[in-house]
Length: 248
Image (cartoon, rainbow, N blue to C red; front, side):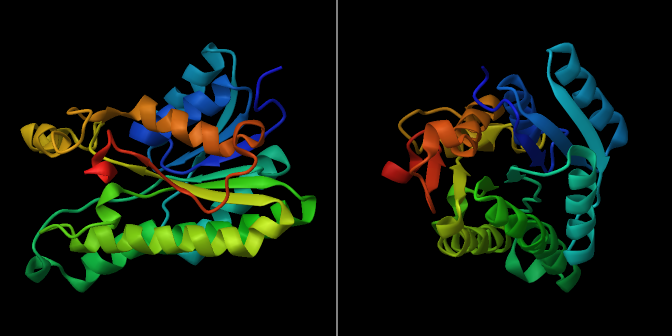
């Protein structure tokens, strides 16, 4: 039997990059996956790819920005699959730039997607997990949440908030059987980070692996944390998947 057979999962930002790799990996382990994203064409392609590989998935169009959109997505996912056992808060934006060039609209957009949306997805889904006595929430943060870097203040701050929320939710829901953890990727090569070009390689050279990670490598860590069989005693952890960047 597949390790996630009978499990229903919701992956935000599931049409590209780490989210796409995570949706494929979860489905490959037997989970039924709700793939959430903005691009319906790409979403249908992901669902078709999962089906071709023998898995089960459905696409839910979602433009996440805060409470109403998050709760609407959560309810749609529950309506499709009956319940959600695993929530992967992956959707996010990662702007780079000087503080003085950041507008209030920029600030609100980043915190809306990176913090408010995960917060209210958890608010909507975690209580039902707790009533059932089991569930897993995996937040996708970043290595940049743990150190200061010029141009990364807004992005790093939003993900640092998610790090704290991971620990707070673990304390809140863990006693009821809901495991809440996070992965902290380092430089990772995806279509979203492609514009960084050689800068991504230079950033990766700071870690012992001396190369960027792949979306699939991050996804494997997410699957590990999502699986009660594999990580039953892991609560409130921030798992670095960063080529060793946290060690130096």
